[in-house]
Amino acid sequence: VLFISHHLGVIAELCDEMIVMYAGELVESGTTREIFHDARHPYTQKLLACDPARLSQRVPRLPTIAGTLPDLRRRPSGCVFQPRCDRADAQCLTTPPSAPVGGSHIAHCWHADVPLGAMSA
Image (cartoon, rainbow, N blue to C red; front, side, top):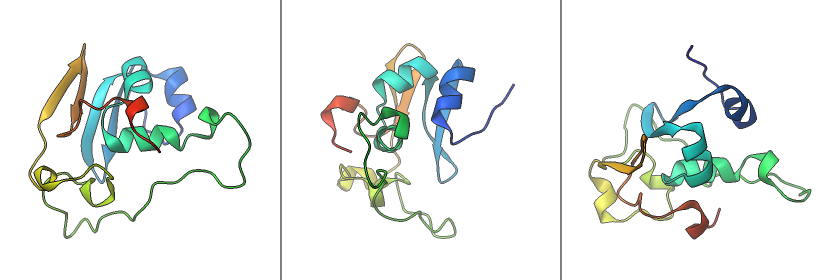
């Protein structure tokens, strides 16, 4: 069964494996556990940081991802997320590799070696 959702809690409950997409491109894939516990693509990390279920206290405004979605008629070169990514560098202007993280977990990012805890939301 293919289940498509933006609701991370539902994905965590229903899905064994997941694929994270941004602007129509696959950015990370693996088991739901691998991705929820060790996200490696900056978009996935920021997406998880915006999940209200992960907040430890009430806040007046929910976290968001800075920037705007790309114009899909004029896609950015290289990584589609690089215009919004705080880790983007010159390397990100070229197509990122499929970086194996471990198990079935793959991140399509030049900086996939940076774990979730090493990045601020």
